[in-house]
Length: 439
Length: 196
Image (cartoon, rainbow over all chains, first blue to last red; front, side, top):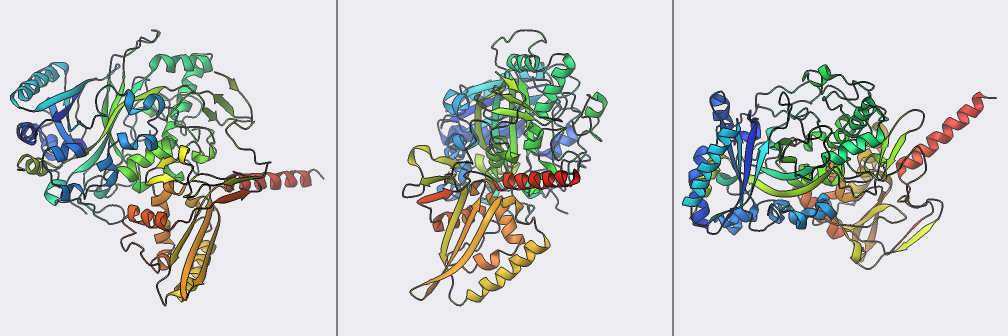
């Protein structure tokens, strides 16, 4: 079995920090020396996965640093090395917008956080145990930036868990973090139904992947134990979502079922395959049971989980081909204030700001966006996209298989809008030192 | 917003009852509506669905490998009828022909999704069904194709010969829809037989 160099891999790849708040800062380097000076200081704060695990009980904050293609160039990585990075990373997320479904209201020209700017060079991710710790770190980082010449903060985003705080969920109320791939050698046993642990090379550069192949742009000192990260900031239109549920369900029970049919799970997390008629919150909360199902035998027609639902698109399980080559690690958090139940839409920005981590953006992240989320004809559906994260312009439909006749919703509204995004390279710890010492 | 219970076709679906022909500009794309895929522009869907026609010169002296390969594919599909299912195919045709003493290979496929979408799955299938035995006999085929989907797709794109005209007697219908219709027909005849 592969031994992972967990003392060199950034913590975000292998662990999940017990954070209730956080902040992303998007940076631009006006000079290579300025960028390297900032990196030299901040890299001391970055936990490896091993260090994170050892001190998680005492620690209150966890820092991650990653760079865009332009950022690597701005730090002084030479052209020969840059040319060995994959095409999609070199182009960046904005250039790939049409293929990713970032058109119309989702188009990068509407993004206000400057992540679409070619001047975006780096992200620093802070996860903090509480708001006080975040405030302390934010002011520390502001001091560092003030001390570094030629480093500019393009934008920032504060993260907040959304109540109730007992479990992770988004602003729509769906329980999150239910289906994560396990990595061979990382030490975590997969929950039942999550599949066998996957080869580390699916997520971390420098290790064999599921085909036995090792991907490693050059030089190795820069790329080994690194990975690629797609950032997605998505507003969730909670008022519109609740209106939709009320429009399509007469009673609270019917409304819950409509919400469940869009996702493929009840908002409690209970999967419709295992709880088709009625919510089962105990099932939703039980990691030994809440991911343990398939589609081919248990729900081939989609009578429980509609063929076009979010979880059936994002992880077709036994109905997808070569699934071991399509998995992704997801990290992130919610931002913005919760919209109280019963309150009217207030127009305040709230949503999910997440990272998809994988060894190949084109094979893993972009495939999921282009085919699973946005192929209108996925599973022969004809005129649908992912009801939660697909590009919806009000002209598409959503079919809910049902006996004797299916229910078809036409003119599905967009419940989310993409508000920012970028491709980052997430270096290992030694690679951060390599970058800081370039000349 | 309207909600209705119905089995009518959506307005976007194209009319399979009307045979249709489509003239395609030189180069294979309609310039004002080129859809971008992960590996570049996607060839348009036509009344004859999606497809490709790949032509390449074979390496001298390898002709017999192609005939041996045909036997392999026949056996593979016989043993595992769904082994090519991921490719969402209607039909495939393989042929060899000579020009001025050189032998050329043509691989023509008609399928229901643009090739770009399932490129990596196709590469995996080609490896598992032994399609490499034929492609590796083509001049210029990337030696690292198994691990380099981008190089594989580049070869396919460079050797793709786009149509300038395509026709469908029952346009835009997918293989799955045809199979569903035939299943339904079979179920109806069984039902009618039962009622005798």
